[in-house]
Image 1 (cartoon, helix red, strand yellow):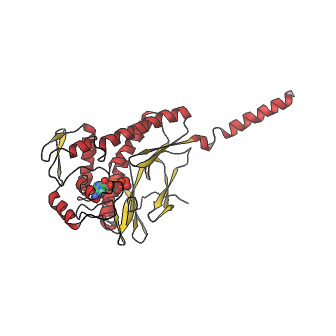
Image 2 (cartoon, rainbow, N blue to C red):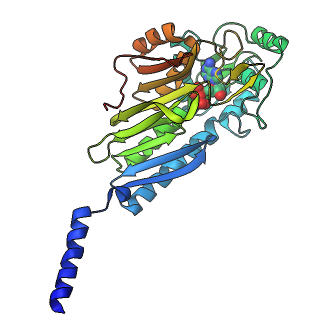
Image 3 (cartoon, protein in one colour):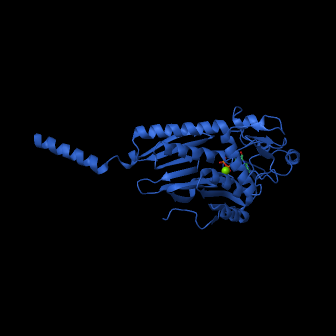
Amino acid sequence: MGVVRFFSLLILVLTLTACGPGPTEKKKETTQLLMGTLVTISTWGLSAAEDEKAVTAAFREMARVEALLSSHKPESAISRVNASPRGFPRKVDAEVLHVMREAMRFQELSGGAFDPGLRPLVRLWRFSETPPPVAPPSRDEVTAWLQARGGGVGVELTDGGMVLLNRGVGLDLGGIAKGYAIDRAVSVLREHGVKNAIVNAGGDMRVMGDKGGAPWRIGVQHPRNPDNAIAVVDLSGDIAMVTSGDYERYFVTKERRYHHVLNPGTGYPAESGLMSVSVQASTAMAADALSTAVFVMGPKRGLAFLKQAGAEGMLIDAQGRKVKTPGFREASE
Ligand code: ADP
Ligand code: MG
């Protein structure tokens, strides 16, 4: 009896030490709906309690950023600026100014392809409305917007605030805010001592560390086949990857596809010969703005622009062909 008990105990101890907490237990995943998309935070090697504390705080931070920067939520800081009269400076808090300053830097760097002032045009196209649009605005409406908008940046930063210069301008940080929220989530995880994690907001992500020595493996969605990956990417260390595509929010009418990345120069969805652009950069905010900008710029200008910005990219052209910068990280096998 005693021998049997000893052996069963020995086997139990051996099993526990051999497996440790198994791989499924080492990786912990939590998903929440935020910023109109499913956000998953995965951590590696934490106890359940450590994971829960850090991840809860990270999600809370993302919800805070969304409430601050969303242009759909009427109470957000951005919506309050949009509701104010044009031509008068308006105070905004330092964090909003920080994101705006970055957005305007990318606007300048991209020669206006990235534009954080497109709210009136985005409303004309109604992409973020329910039910989603089925027809484009009339050409007259788009022309009227182009005239109201005029040239130039459209926004001026003042001491502790900003001025929207005319009715054609309104803030829409949809091309950069998700990236900023991802970066903030990563900072909060880091403050909680987390070393290995991935924050993935519907395919836009930033990674920290790895999974016990193995990189985080991520599929980039095929622009025309949602069940397939067009590329598999291995990321580790501290890096972000964000994708902009014509397949996320769009409608097709009379055999034409209208999608939600707009060309500020024409007022119409960008027709740059690309179906998607994935950018790898050190922050998700930069990768987010750059992917949107390159999507508008097209392959030729876009690749030069990425090089100048010190980021890496993978562009999928209209024929489904990949064009990559030399340093774009993909899985080796
Ligand atoms: P996603 O929202 O799928 O992450 P993007 O990062 O490319 O995609 O951002 C698209 C959103 O950014 C649009 O829904 C709109 O709110 C805004 N936007 C559209 N065109 C531009 C542009 N040229 N520059 C900056 N923001 C844009
Ligand atoms: Mg973007």
